[in-house]
Length: 262
Image: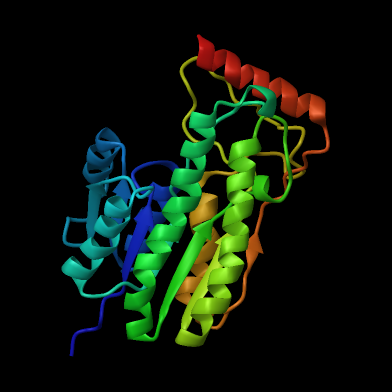
């Protein structure tokens, strides 16, 4: 009998951390459905991955809506007949001080980051419970544990995801489904035009920013060893990222906001 292929869904999977997770899961032999609301990024990602659509399927959709979340989960079931891993990675990250924060961006952050995580998990659980196995991995952030000026919506949404992980772990664990949360520190993606990266960031003791591959590798060893099947409680992993220097954070925030306004 042919070996049963495991299947995964990765949200926000067309770029950055999500794309690296997709790449590494597929490299581990899993079939992967990646969903992202950026259609251009989806097309680029499908072209850059060497796997065919029978192994990696990248679809366009907004997981912050019920229809989008359902599309992600049902594509895995329709294509592969099962769902073994859900990685809730999709997120938006506004930078606004509370006094000036627009309600629209605040609501959008929670709609994508928190509602999307809840909806995808809600729709995935019946399939995993029927299989009596499965893993949900939520990508949190150090921002959900340590605050910084200008990050109220993002930090609050990631704190909500950490608590949602704890609740889901308690509810899903008795059915053989594990729920974990990874909380990375500062991760640098592609730089904006004209932006220069600090060679030695002073607020990170290891002396460099994290990369999307660091996050992807952060939970893959557990999947390889099936370690996550035993962990029915909340787990958080985070990379050392000190935020005890408000002047640094404020300077970085102003720099990013100035780029936005240009």
